[in-house]
Structure formats: structure tokens, C-alpha cells
Length: 373
Ligand SMILES: [Zn+2]
Image 1 (cartoon, rainbow, N blue to C red):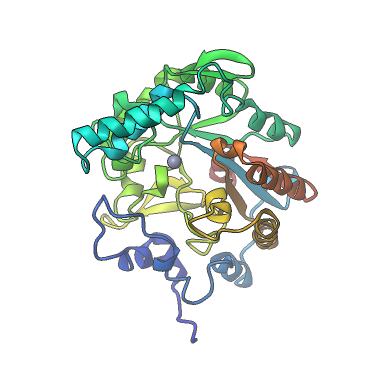
Image 2 (image 1 turned 45 degrees about the horizontal axis):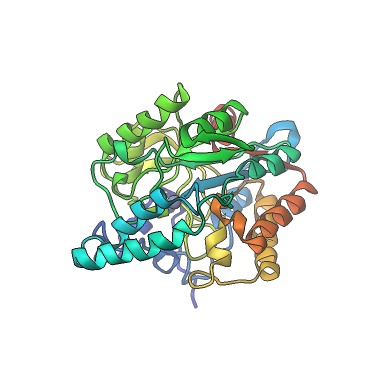
């Protein structure tokens, strides 16, 4: 196949992505993924072609703290905080079945599944161990970003796929009984970055996004600067401006759900662009390169086993190392119950630890990039 000429500036500004969106881009439609990407038919999704081009034309590799060769940005989207919570489960089921089933069917569905959950009453919840993520990262001298959902109170337009926990739901963190808000505060206090994981319908609504941001900021008592849209639900024509207007400095949504790779051909952070106003925005993108679901999910994405997935992680890491960029990893904390998913995270960290790498959160990378680009 002939490789079409790609204008890398247009690529980073989002023109190709905007041109190739499915005709039906209604908010309810499934998020368009790698098959719509301009680089995919050319076989370029796994190559940081923009970075290669930059270096071939005399560009200098980015500088990282302590002369590290490249950066690894560790991130977690907190979609669930409990596995056995009847409340969280019932809220999720209610949203999931409402709208397309009769009231009787909905009731039966929830009752049946709720009875199932009652069996777990009094048993330690397998997700109440999120301190484990912090512990393994502390061993690497690393802080990650935890993107939290702000709870339903600040949401005016709910969607069935939105998260179902509330800030006052009970959890156990580091063997202490507390609520979600207290866990968030503790993660923040220990030096990790807390970002926003907003609702499905926040992608094109500045007011909605601002309210959700403020909700989490009220918990923390300080500003939030990092964001990743839930489900990577994002519209390149609108979301950059909306996030920027809502006051975010760093986004890390621009990766893939069903594949890994360089959605915009780059591992370098860059300033997002407002396609409507045709100007650069102050918000910086730190692109997502590898997520757990794309590698290991059994019925979507690449559907790999642990060993094969690890080979792909190595390939991405080596590509990013070559250009001196940022390898952003996403592991969902609730996958801690899957031994192979957890193992793969540990194997990835151990592999990267052998290299000259700077482990950092979205906020740390964003701040460094702003000061040193
Ligand atoms: Zn999510």
C-alpha cells in the first residue's frame, strides 16, 4: 500500500480525526476507535511517526529530570470502588436496565442480582485494597494519577455507562474504614495526583465539567489540573475547548480502547487545538499509549494472554525510549482481582525500572513539559 503523505501539524491539530469520524457521531454512539484512525490503514499506529519525523529534521529529544531517557506516566481510571456493594451495584443495574425494559423486568433484574450481592455481606471486599497500587509505585519512587468520578450529585445529564459510586460510599483503604472522599484525600495527601474522570455527557458541556471538577476540588481543598474522559468519550472538534474552558491544564484521554499505540503519531505532549476557533489552547495533551482493557479483555480489543501482552508493552516502551517521549499506561484499579492483569502491571514496572526512566503522574509530566519545552 502506498503511504499517503501526512501533514503532521494537521494531524496534531486534529483535522484528520475530525474528518474521519463516523457519520453517526451522536452522543449515544459507541466511541470511535482505532479503525477510524488515519494512521491505522497505513500500518503506522505502533510507530511514533511524528516524533521520528521531528528528530530526523534536527529536533532535539525532550529533556527529563535527572537526565532520564524517557518518561513513564502511570494512570488509573477509578470506575469502581467496591465489588460487593449492594448500593453501588443496584445503582449500576438500575441505570443499565432503565429505558429499555418494563418496570417489572427492571425490578426482577435488580432483585435477582441484589439477592446475589447479599451473599457477600460481611465478606471483605476484594477491591478494598487500592493502597496496593500506591505501594508498588512507591517502590519505584513513582506517583501515578488516579482519575476519580465526582459522584452523581454534580451530574445533570446521566448516562447508563457512568460510574455508580458516591463520595460518601464506605470503603476500606490501607486497612482503615473510611468513605470514598476520605480515600481520595489520603491518596492526595500521600503525594499522588488526583484527576477528574467525568461523566459521559461532560465531553461537550463546559458547565457540566466545571461542576464535576468543583465537586472533587471541594473534597481535596485545592485545584484539580488533570482529566481523562470516562470511556475515552471525547470529540476532537469540541472537547479540547470545553476542557480548557473548565480550567484543566492536562488531558490524557487521547489513546485507544481496543488497541494500543500512538493515536496522534506521537508520544510527546502537545498543546491541543480548537478546530472551530483555529487556535492553540493552553491545555496540554499527554497521550495515552497502552491500556489494560485493550490488551487483556477477553471479549474486546486485542484479547491477549499475559505473556503476549507483555511483548507488546515492551515494543511500545522501546519505541518511546528511542524517541525520548512519554509512555502513558492506564491500569484500572478494579482489575486488581485479576491475577494476570495485576502481574502484567508489575512486569511492566519492573521492565521499565531497568531503564533510565522517569516515572511520573500526569500533573508532574504536564508541569515539567510546561517549564522545559
Ligand atoms: Zn472510566
